[in-house]
Image (cartoon, rainbow, N blue to C red; front, side):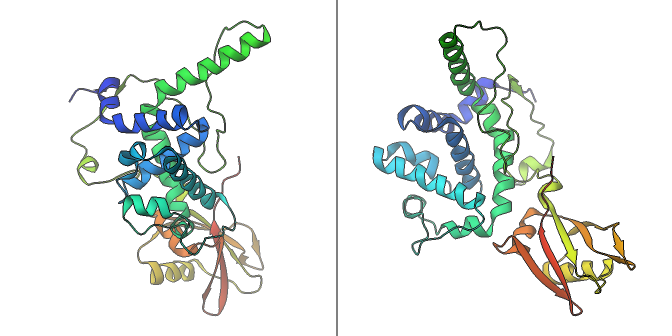
Length: 287
């Protein structure tokens, strides 16, 4: 199978490209915000909400703008420590457009699943299908800025403002003009969508224990296996030991969805095993 060309990729994602340009040039939305909104909508497409990208440009201007504002509120809900969720769910236009039960509560409950999904969409889809549009916009901005300052243009390093993002990480504009597709790869035929290539960091959790109440590795494994099934990929008890007791542990799960199940919309979950407390939170790597 020959690699997919840029033209073929653009044709396949024609609607996504049109909507992205619509957000920037018609609704005059911020470039970085538009990129994140598109990533969110594409993730929703792959998770049972297929209508947004195909209907947004048919909406009246004010309604389309309000729909984008709802998408931004979804992103803010993911990022915020504590989000207020209105009684109507906060997404009436999105709900009406998709004819699905969707609210900000979902973005609170599935926070880390959606973060991993958006990261995957940014890297695997948006970096490829919007590369030419982003290059045109960013180059134009640099040229205008340099001309205004009276400088000379030599080497233009294109970076999208706002990246690396505190939640979604790096975003590198793809310069490849072809995309390899191995049709013998079984994953292509299994209906897998974005979020299937999550990293171990996406699935990692940090556990802490109380001094004087030692928790063993078998106890930790039993606690999570009993509640969430065969979910533990690896478990490392902390090397910092006080009175023969590990005070923390690092756990990598098999699925990022289990992270959200454990936390249930909270930043820290308090669990119990044999009368002993275990505090669990999402592991965040510090660069």
